[in-house]
Image (cartoon, rainbow, N blue to C red):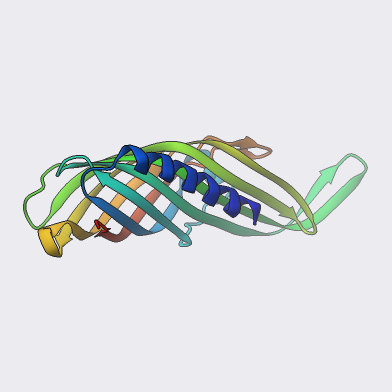
Amino acid sequence: MKIYKHSVIIAVLLLTAFSAICQQGSKSVELNYTVGIPTGNFKNLTDKTSFRGFEAAYLFGITDQISLGLQIGFQDFYQKYPRQTYSEPGYDLSAVITSSVQTVPIMLKAKYILSANGFLQPYASFAAGGNIISYEKYYGEFVDSKTSFGFAAQPELGIHIPFGKGKRSGFHMAAGYNYMPFTFNDANGLSHALVKAGVSIEVND
């Protein structure tokens, strides 16, 4: 559980520092359900789409179209392979292979709504920061594992559908890409495409 405790502590510290800077303007919370799709070298480790993901962001409105804030996410990738035999000097190992990877990106995020008018409001965003990674690969009862902290970046394009007082809250749908360098054993990058849907709720006092 250390990976989750560390991510929460880092997120709270960053959010406290950021909120002290951004005292003016609107404030909103974004909650997203995310689907992760492995791409590139990550597919050599697992080619299974992950339906176990979420994101949460706290954003401060600088203008009606620009907001800045902190985003934290989680994605869980898992795949079990049929039994295989691996030969090493002096012995053969026959085992079921299981890959398990969890990513917890904690990033600063900038969001720009291309048009603040209309029922459908297209937007673009970019986030960058750190990434807590938990990697485990099981060979039967034997396991290779590593927990590390690395870089992460996320460009995103989406559609915002406003509702509520002042049309400052809303639903949204988006597609993005998580760039996540990581090298360990047979893992050479954990980058993956994202499809997400969620809600943005204004939380001004």
